[in-house]
Image (cartoon, rainbow over the protein chains, first blue to last red):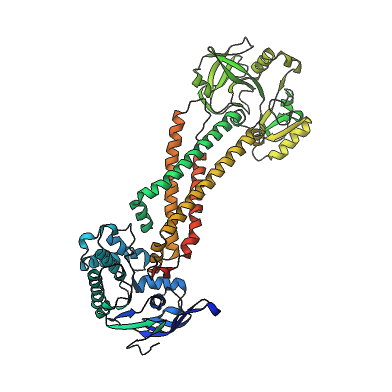
Length: 228
Length: 374
């Protein structure tokens, strides 16, 4: 994945706010990167641009052989469904779907065959220790179990890139650590690329690399060759 | 679609409330429509039951069956107009009938047996024959008053007993029980009950007629009016609407039913607006992970259609149950055609109501799923 000279400006003229400033970064397969910085530093904006959720004002995002920023909104939506996995802050599971259905929901969304998604969901439930809880609704699951379901949903389409947004925000330290360790292990063992936005510096030890962002500028983009 | 169905299955309480609201409105609409149809049939049956394309009235009758007066001699003139396949006669006498000891509102209708205008929906017995004095074909509504085949009914002011030889359905006139008698019997009864009409001679009030296949009704009607010079020929549908109060009755009920359908659309729209607002974060997540707008809108539409169809089914059952317990004096008619058209209208309103949420769903920004906003 390559982020090349991405700038994002909100508003125009004197009210313009520069959320990202010439950000460049690269990420290899089998690499898990932590994006850290204080509130309002531009972490979420950068994650949104990389995930095709937000169009940059300038710059290019390339994932695999696809230049995401060249795609139409509709194509970006399809790309997200098939090639990017998301783990959101909090649990953000669909409350009226069971643990398994929260994963297999991707069969309705992505282009992957339902049978393939179903088989992967069963495997992931097994791998994530949720096999016994597959028919439970989110309200019947513990916090850690919900987050594991969210991780399973992100992995069920076998995406190239996993984007993780503040995974420990609503968890206690012990559970947060477990979840990030699990994320790192799942991403690395499956040879995926992953980016985790976090403000919790204790979690960066489980990642391969840390990039700090401040006022929209990347400060320590080691390995990417581009900073600030 | 699976997500939409799962939501309805697992959050039944919330969906019962919207289905209940739609069912209640549909119940009201169906009862209103049944009353409208019942009143319409009860008021206009005498004209709609007979097989006729148009009716000839006297000009000075101004399209009123009771005001119109035509000499019986005009019958042959109408029959001779090219394009006329068959012509009958209608005369109406609004009076009081007596069955047993019970008086009832009666419309004694004289007609030509075997010709246009004769009741077509025979449900029991037979029709009076030509010249069969004293035989009457009664409207089936009289059976609820205990009148059976072979019974005798009398007309207040007349000494001639009328024997019921058959029953016809939906043949009432202005909500009075109709008694169909041969024209000669009607003329004799009329003079007996209203002696002042004797001076008018042999008159009827309208000539219902059928046109030959392929003949243009407008042209035949114009030819009849040219031949008789003092007549106005109008289609049966126009004659029905010209009956006192029918058009006003129809437009009033139509307005109430239309307003009720607007309420259905508003209830659905409000419900979906609220749940869209409540599910905003969830929808943002689904969009972020790759759900297209089309997929989400399809879910909203399916939920709205299921809610309205289930609501319609509930309202229909309630309305039919009410129909069973209503006394026969309440003129209700549950017609399949009305039920089908109201079903389609309900479903359309459900879809329309849901469509108001489409813009809200489309405008949800998938980027709001990140940063803890969802």
